[in-house]
Image 1: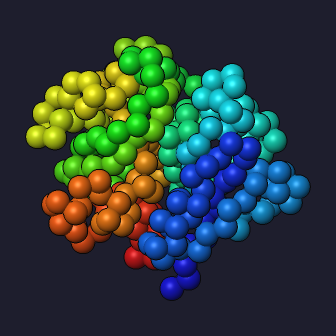
Image 2 (image 1 turned 90 degrees about the vertical axis):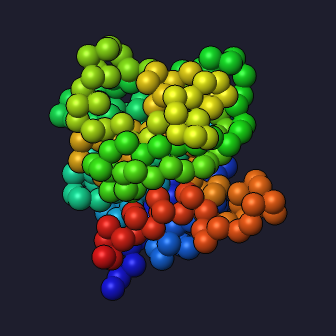
Length: 257
């Protein structure tokens, strides 16, 4: 069966495109790292891909707010093409800075209006958080992951605190099953800092759109795809695969299963 093609988007400051491409290739996809200028110059290029990945990093130095400049550029220069892409049964994933981009484009949480209704603000600790965290999958809606899983992934961000615009907006996400990942303690219970590394409301680490085909999350699944990526593998032994690999495998399987 034909392998799905993944567009790993690059701009100035992107620095996780290599790891993201590697993870998708390991899962069986064909990947291409594409600069946003190339998409703008070659209209229609995006149509040739089945998955759009917006990887982590510090796009444009996060000079205004994390992901804001890239979000404005993406929708101003390529808005019609991006909207057509997400309306055509294709997949989008935004990781860390990519998640920040997706919420500031309005692609997440999504819905008919596609207006920004959530944000990712500065961590409560007022510092950059670089650590490993446990995540629980809380919905069957997202095509990238199955419910009932617990993942161990690294975070690396300064602006990762998930905040909905209103309490009603948070309730709507819960009711629609759009909260995909929550931070939990190692035992799976309610987390405290640093288990919730940024103070996210309702311990939210990642959400999807109503279709389940657009996913954004702050932790980095691409940094735990090999078993030896685990920070304690020499003491605890090698697993069969890294916890984050299932995110990429499920995305590829959406087109090949």
